[in-house]
Length: 312
Ligand SMILES: N[C@@H](CCC[C@H](N)C(=O)O)C(=O)O
Image 1 (cartoon, rainbow, N blue to C red):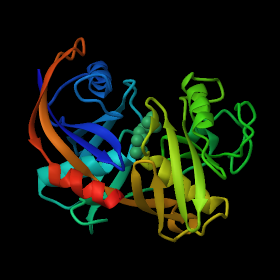
Image 2 (cartoon, rainbow, N blue to C red; image 1 turned 120 degrees about the horizontal axis):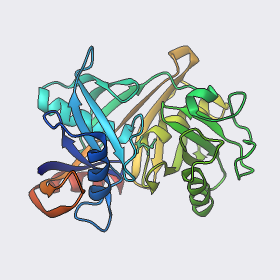
Image 3 (tube, helix red, strand yellow; image 1 turned 135 degrees about the vertical axis):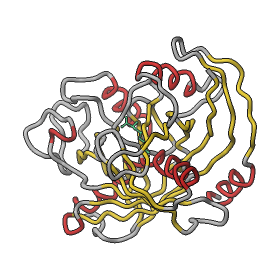
């Protein structure tokens, strides 16, 4: 079959975005397609694939995210901004409720972060800390504490966004240690019900810098749910006040974030880019995942340049 796709990114966390509203494929096929399209040695290369799906009940449209390893997580906030943009353009709207795998989220087009940068605001709620929600086999919520059984002496905060996140505040991000711990979580230890995303976070004045090893992907330029989790964890642990907008920097760029805390329903809002790089088409066999050559039908150089200028 020929799949049309848009290569896009949020803060350098990149995706192949597919309008799947008229496509009837089973989960195993999407898993194979994700592994092929995400393969950095293949024709596209990305951290995940995003599927724009039909809305249901009060949702205007839906989004599914499939990780590079073919697993399907609960959500993805960098991807949600890109899928939201596709949904807005398909339906001629600029705000929506979006159905995710196990939750829903509110999205709206926002004033540009920088000239020429398409920007979307997204709100998720509530962030949860109960171990059952995080998928952590411990007795009580973990807030800025060492986790017995985790091979790290750092203090972590464990959060469900609703995908699982382990957040450690550090003086300086040690990428090797992050990768080692992320890889340990990827092996599916008994401590974790369904693995976890792991982030190291530096507090920089009133802002944050976050680097993440993503479940099902590896080290990425940015992870939106991790940035939202970090903003919430900074409030929970008293490092920064709740209810204040901050900039969350990451290796791929930055977003603006505001964690509301308990008084605001434990919501977190992020505003960030949804950059479309090119549109293309590829022949792919859903039964095997084997793909033909990629045809690029539209390059979006202006957007790519606008994001590069915004990052500089
Ligand atoms: N990049 C994402 C998160 C994608 C899902 C994650 N890998 C998981 O398995 O939970 C984001 O921007 O939130």
